[in-house]
Image (cartoon, rainbow, N blue to C red):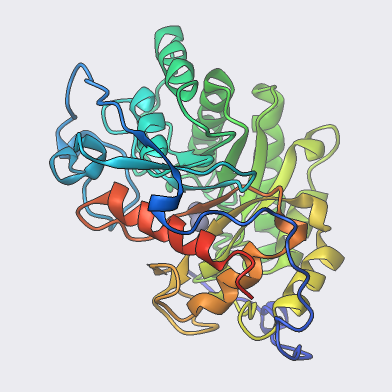
Length: 371
Ligand SMILES: [Zn+2]
Ligand SMILES: [Zn+2]
């Protein structure tokens, strides 16, 4: 955190205000999803009878500051829980816990009616590495076969900083990042979402280091998993708070590796970074298309924000209950250009992640065609 970001690099999304976002909005051709759980086909969630009910809370993987996953209070373990089933093409889901092992995640996705799912493939706040062995991969794929999940996403460890000027930390980050890519490949995950690093000393040098780290990792971990660089809220020296940052980063990765790199937009981060998804949605989309090209947008994180517009802070809130409110999510859910982009929530889960996430996903689906 040595220096502040240069003032010319601020997000400039508020400029040239659009009228009402709804006025310019095209309706998504997506079929209307059933809004009420009762309207959806019901499939009672089979109790999965895991070998071990759960790992001790201290050993499971989760982002910092979130309550520990507790199997006892989660509806996925309630035999009376009715999993919603959505008979449509909407790619929507959540980040779910891998407590008990990666093979336990798909059932949690199914319990919330997910058609897209994000997981960690290791403990996200530890350096400890691990490989996905054949037995684990087989169990994961078998469990996936019992779901309607079509797009799978991994999120990388929070410790990785490929942009660091500290060569020791950067080398460690590259090794860890190679591990992330290899686990995605072994598990057959479609996307790996990664935060750009913190440049610490100088932005341009940091972007170059970040690009070189990605290039090395991709060259050492060949495969099909697409790397999606996530937009950041822009606190401290974080790279990725502007679309221009991400474009420079991607441009600095040589082919053929660049073809494996795309972008994940996190609505909370983008709003905090100055992209006004509420009042200037079409402007933001146009800027993304101009700077990065909409074809690069392959994953979205749908999160509301606890902090105001342009706050440069990263505090996720329940959908429609934060500073973005429902308008931003109505815009996204009805945008035909985003119909094929898998969207996952990373919102607070409380003591019952399954019930909370299912409620958030039903809320998002309720926004479809409701404009
Ligand atoms: Zn993230
Ligand atoms: Zn995110």
